[in-house]
Image (tube, rainbow, N blue to C red; front, top):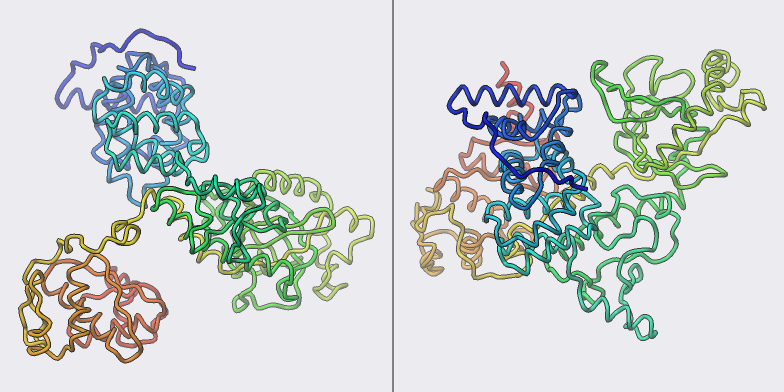
Length: 617
């Protein structure tokens, strides 16, 4: 709870101005952040806030505040603990948020540190209770900037912190902001949607129908009308609360999961943007998890590894001895046979495995370290290949720590006798060569590789979970097709020389004139007009109808009439090569080909790694 202190007052040091005051505030800020034993009282608040504002680079400020070697979290808590009334929100919380919630820190490179600092602010004892009571009661007296910053802060907190999404205080503030209409409607609407302040009325009706045994027939074997939540420990109504990696309880569940139906008959989210994000997240995740379930129930023999034992833990970076890494565990396996690990695709980085034995089933872990280049170590260890694995849930981490302790003395005996055991067992069944009393006490698992493609799903799922809204929502969600044309193109554009440099008026397009003056047919002319006058365009047709031809023409028109860069994404490497080669033939040379799987000799020099190497030399 907040301690009542004297009201906000200006210290004598606030009057310092100019360069000297700037340097003084920075020195005070550095001293407070670096020295955890330094005292902090009301007089230190203003220099601390001025020190934050003195950073021209806000990512640099985030780095200092989030560095565990400093005491940034302590000082933020100290500063926020000085709030004694609604007026102090303007003087303390607003300056802090205005230095954190800026466009520069929202970039992907800085997002993790930004979320860490937001978490520190959110976790300040008593802050959320204060905002939900005293501050909202006096909301009309707050400035527009303060209200906007607090709302932005709650949006960011709700995206990254599980507790915030279920917090009654956050929902109280969101409801108050919506009722008073003192903040931007879109921002408040986004906050209300993320914390699911409103639920679809149809969900309540569906539940009532289920209870009366009058539920409509669901046209999907894999879903359920009952809204999500409560089936197992990873079944949540808010999709952002769902762990990407399945839990042991989830994998053991044999009932029907909730999946969104195309008909919408089991919808429970009122906001269409959040409903679309929820739908895409759940369906994509089920695509990954469904394959895992199949691999668990019917694993291929080559994907099962016997006598896996957890023999240690580490936070040392496997590829940089001076670096650090998140906690991972060393797991040693018995090999199937002699394996060339440089060519073998088994146990890939970021692959998911399941551990099971007579007492444990369906413990999920991901492969964090896979090293095959060091003779006698890691995958080439004479006692059996060793990998680094990460567990994703607290209970499983604690269990792995206990395994390390229980296996310690037995593992020491095993490692001392590795060479002798290898000769006795010809490199196979190494645990079987141990004396029976030791073998019985060695805690081992069967390990099954259940997914070697989860790394492809993970970044997409993480992005969906972190999105507050849907880009281009007017077109993609609300299906409005009469919006203004893109502003990156001028009204009059000129076609390339191969199309007679015809000048086109985007607001007065003539298909007849286009067909007469160029080699385009009417269908291609309509596709070109749609692409140049819409924010979102879908051009489709059977093979040979000119999709690549029209696509390259669109790219040429944009490149020749603007300074814009274009990101081209294709479903296959071959399709991307075809498109880029077409652009090369048309004279475009400012290309960067991302990815190293091109088979085109003409595009080799445009690969990102080739251009980087050229830049260095």
